[in-house]
Length: 111
Length: 105
Image (cartoon, rainbow over all chains, first blue to last red; front, side, top):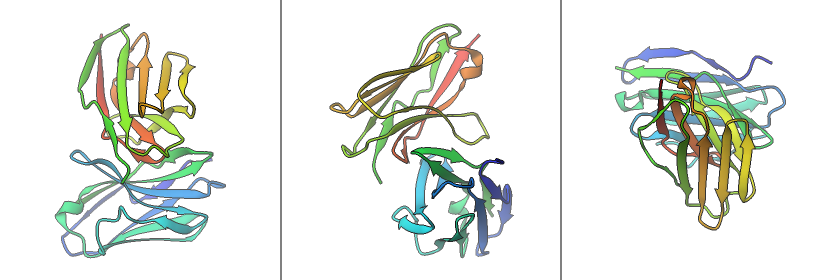
């Protein structure tokens, strides 16, 4: 298996633009997580899904952030409008038997 | 979010020494605990999982769990320069901020 796939790997955008991050989990994994990592705050859980259903989105910073999982093999995290403080590395992870497997991350820079 | 605290370091040890990393967690209901290693610019990778009180050994790594004290630790024996990385502790899927380890040749 190719592991968790994320795209794009790097994104540079201007404040106010919409940003969409994409994730393909490992086939057969039934839980998917979105994290944000910064030097100051570490690895923060934003939202997670079980069997494509959002279970806990309490970590989503504000209404500018939204996430969807339309099927077992695809999820998106959208930021609209983006702000400079959203600059971070965003990781997607899928889980099998309690163990998480992380994608390579998307480095987002908002100018 | 459930809080996971780690000694922030940075931690430096000479090659061949034992590195000791510590972690406490706030949620008494947590049942699963993990240590991840993250090299600079890379994603976290799982190195140890532990679910019950006591020690669990895997090669040069030993994880220790004390649920009464809400404490998890990781020992790395015979530390190698390739162990230099940030180590992340997780209770379930909530992470600490990590401890940076440098092994000096």
